[in-house]
Amino acid sequence: MHRNSVETKKKILDALENLITYHGFTAVGINAVAREAGIDKVLIYRYFGSMEGLLKSFAEEKELCPSVSNLLIDLHDGAPFHEIAAKIVIEHARALQKSPLAQELVCWELTEQNPLTVLFGKEMEQRGLNALADRGIVPDKDSVTLSVVLLCGLQYLILRGRNNNPMMNIDYSQAEIREDIERVISKTIKAFYDVHEGSPN
Amino acid sequence: MHRNSVETKKKILDALENLITYHGFTAVGINAVAREAGIDKVLIYRYFGSMEGLLKSFAEEKELCPSVSNLLIDLHDGAPFHEIAAKIVIEHARALQKSPLAQELVCWELTEQNPLTVLFGKEMEQRGLNALADRGIVPDKDSVTLSVVLLCGLQYLILRGRNNNPMMNIDYSQAEIREDIERVISKTIKAFYDVHEGSPN
DNA sequence: TGTATATATCACCACTTGGTGACATATATT
DNA sequence: AATATATGTCACCAAGTGGTGATATATACA
Image 1 (cartoon, chains in turn purple, blue, orange, green):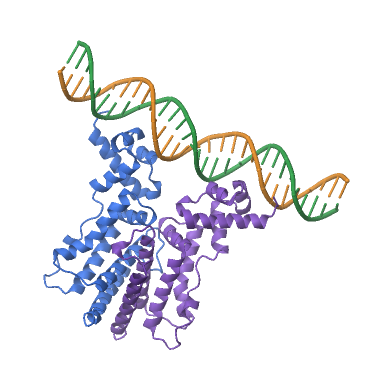
Image 2 (cartoon, helix red, strand yellow):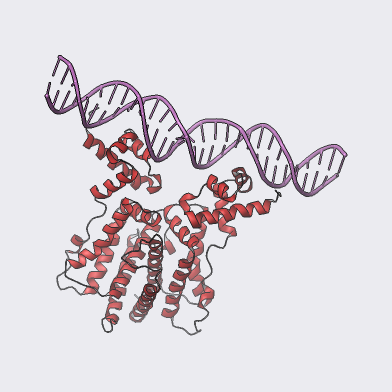
């Protein structure tokens, strides 16, 4: 065997990722990570101090969720707010759907607080805001509220769908149903916006 | 000590409830339940067969979430659909907010499947539907989709708020913010419904 | 070449977990 | 009162957990 600390650290971080992705956050622990990485657990303590330290490093070094900004490039510059908002919500959901790791982290975040879930949560919060800030848009409070509620709803539906346990038979992973949902989302945001801009409070 | 099996069973079921409510579903286990109940764990096996059996009995015998139908009594008979739908969503969320046990079960359901989470999930699904069925209302698909997404969004926000970890500073547990959210929900459903009934597909 | 250090292995600790068999004793039945 | 059964206690098991100290060995540096 070669002795290469950076390689070993990588092995450990990768093992953690695989563990979360394929066995869920409940499977995470010092012994499990060491086993998965094929190294002695004492190396985890040596290089990361503790499980907390490992989670922190993982949160900092791994790409936990892709930026949403670049998913909006096909939106023309003068697009109305409701289109942008809908697009952000929908693309955010699609990205989550594609990433079992991110799904597990969202779920973990609802269960427990640790360096990883906290950092991940902050990152996720910033995604949509950045996409808007990039375009110099400052949305009013109610519009944000609606978008967030819709976004959270989609996140919840995606989490529920994971174990073939969809909510109300609304299985986001099925293409036709996803299209239905996305159409309703767009229609809803537009309808709200049309009514709202007349009297935004 | 008196020897009373029904009392012991009750002790065990109560212990499980307290454990879930005050220490979260991750704390649930044979040893933990026995400890909390102050009885020997062998009695759990004797009376419920296994942890699974205990969860099943718990799901069947405990009142996991209050019916939502009786929360709608102050709604007049001829109320338009959008008002009823909004009321159901909002009352559902308020009920969840009041029940830490239900919150934990919702979270558990996203993490793992077991007799308790499955039964609880089915019960939750039926709540809104029953409220509508009681009034002889058969909503169209898109309206259901919107209501479900909004409802799920509120559930998610409530779960996130539990550990002082609110999403985007939208803390459902704060009265003023809750009122904002509820207002947006009502406004949204009405706006969608107004547009939608003209072209329900 | 010899030596120090970074890296990795191994053995062990106390504690918790789910699970079971042997036993004691209160209660009910005959 | 004698017996059977329901109920409860105890001791134990193998396996897993987080965590640590002692030791081996590859690599780098003198």
